[in-house]
Image (cartoon, rainbow, N blue to C red; front, side):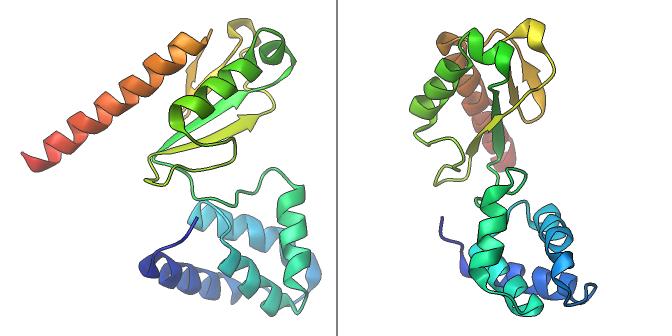
Length: 171
């Protein structure tokens, strides 16, 4: 996903500021990445390159670590964050079908953010609501028993909320 010039400038500024608080030791890599992601919501390539330069390590090493751990995101979070549980209970009662339904409805794949940045879609290991499987969280709100039909309803509801918010802004 391509960042705007303003976003690139903000990334440079935030990462530069944060790197001033860390030494150049390689063991600082994970804490730096965690702090950058906490600040920006994700880890853009430009941030990983600056981190690699600061630690004097190859950028590919930073990218390799980021892609190894699923706590790190490569795409900015959407305005609406949809997380589909694929823990054992959810998977067994159709969590994978729920995920596919969201992919079709939102026209993005798991791990992606829509071009308009309205939605991001992730898979999670367990939400901890197994009795309501399959479970989805939408902006940290738990939705239980999510069937493909409910996927349509959830997305339509989010669209309506977005439209009413936009209309309130123009009033």
